Structures are given as structure tokens and as C-alpha cells.
Image (cartoon, rainbow, N blue to C red; front, side, top):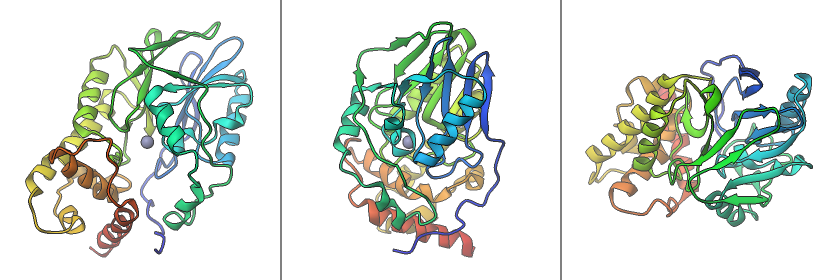
Length: 315
Ligand SMILES: [Zn+2]
């Protein structure tokens, strides 16, 4: 299968390590597209709590040196918001840190230990997967929440939100500063990816986010936002579910159905081709197929994303 070129030439925003509240940082990727994810850092006197790693060794080194340049202490705890490689692949580079995640995320990581990320080169020829690999997390938690406290830093609550973007998503909430690291519950200016999702659960969790006493949301992809970014993610997912209901029962193939989806303003967001797996997932969900069941043929879905992209470019 031929790879796609120039598929994310739309806009960018300022990136780098930005302080969103006292000693609380967002590490923002200025593009936010496939594999270009954000991380977070909560700095204490003695160590930093890191939220999500980067997908390859180069990018992870970039994050660590940005932290060093700002004088942040070394990370000793890294929280994974979910199992996707762009948030979880380089934990092994943090020699002195304990990796913490929800037990469902730990199970997903364990099930994917044998995965060779270079297989994604077939779809993303321009990306570098050097140093990308899963490592078993050290601590898996269950229950309502896990509270972390680094000496000299505000408390951070790791709150699981159920099967949403993936089976085991968790957010990190810093109540004293009204900051939420949403992981991939929020994509902002970048199309959400629902390939492993339970859309109805995800929408409920976004309502939960809006009900929190918070005013700063650090998304998994895209610039830092307020409530508007959470609302936008919810609106997008609602459109996908609504359009899936409308198209359900159509005899056309997924690609043709996706072409009929009216994305409205979200057509301007990056990576619009994600409507292909998103619509496929939504159709499965409406048919009553459990969210744990993977898409039947991910490579075929990826191929259709490429075709959708070509169709967009030819319009
Ligand atoms: Zn993700």
C-alpha cells in the first residue's frame, strides 16, 4: 500500500513546554497530527510527575531536554493516560521513573508487547519509529482514582473514565489549579480518533469533564484550551454517531458512506480521513457490537483512509 504524502499541511500553533499554572506544564506539539502528541509535567521540589511519553526516542529526548532547560527535576513517575503508542512507547527511556496506568491500559500494553511499530511505516512513510516500543507498566491501578503527590507540588488525581477513546483512559486533574490533562479524550483542531473507542461512553466522559471545576484543558493533540475544546470534541463525536444512525443499513461500502458524512466545520480540522475508522466504529456500536471488539480489518480501514484523503484532494 502506498503511503500518504502531505496529509497534514493545515495550520499549526505554537509548541514546546508551556507553563499552564505554577509549575504545571503542557508539552505541546505544534502540529498535533498522527503520532504528534502532547505530554504534561507537574513539577515538585524533588521530582516531576510526567503525563504521557512521546512515540519515538528522538521526540522523547526533546521532551526531556525541554524539561531540563526549564530546570524541572527528573521524572520519577509517569502516568499513561491510555495505551496508544504516541503516548506510551518510550517509557523505558525514563530509567528512574515508575510507570502508572489504569489496569485496563496495562492489559492493553501487555497484549501489544510483541508489536513492531515499524509496521506503521507502510502507512506513515515519513515518520521515524526509532526507539518506539512498549514496556510493561510498573503500577496498574483500579477503583475511582489514584492521588499523586510530589513534594512541593499540588496533588494530582488520576481519574479513570471507563471505555472512552480506548478501553482504559484516565485523565489527570490538578484541582488546586483547575487544570485537566485530558489525554486523547480531547483532540482540539485535530480530528478525534475513535478506532478503539466507545463513542457513547466517550461523550458521557466529556460531559463529566465539563462538570469539573476546571478552566484549563490540555488535550492529547492540539493546543491548550478551555471548555470550548471539550465541547468541540463532544460535538464532533455526536455528529459521527448521528451520521452513522442516518447511514446505517446503507448498502454502500464504508468509503462511499464516509463521503456522504457532513462534517460541517470539522471538515477543516486536521486528519479528516479519520471519519473512516470513526464511522466504522460508530456503525459497529449502533449494531450492538461490544467496543472491546477490534475493527475487523485495520489495514483495509487504513487503505480506505488514504482513498478518502485522495478524494478530498481531488474535490
Ligand atoms: Zn490515543
